[in-house]
Length: 134
Image (cartoon, rainbow, N blue to C red; front, top):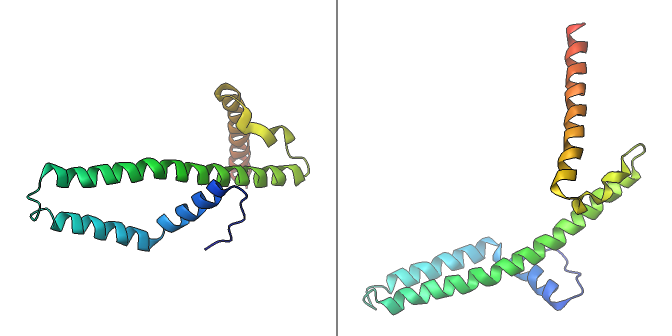
């Protein structure tokens, strides 16, 4: 497991929970719980309570895991963004205006993307032209 060096208790818990529940053993445990639930079906006569147990349990676990996973992903995404910003900042002739792109709205992002698509198209045309001249 990776070293957890996060300041808030919730962030530490979210990181631990995310790593733990993402492990194959957690999947096997969940599958065994489902199998045990299915096996007990005939014992409880496939009653409404028997069904309610699994439905309620899975709903609660899913609801809580959404927040844990989102917290972990938000931190991972922020760290990745900072690393990419550092790479952009450190490259000569890089467009430093791209450093804070995640703060732009959809229209601004599409305008920038269109500019890069045009550059890519020009580069592909130049490549085709150089290949045809050989």
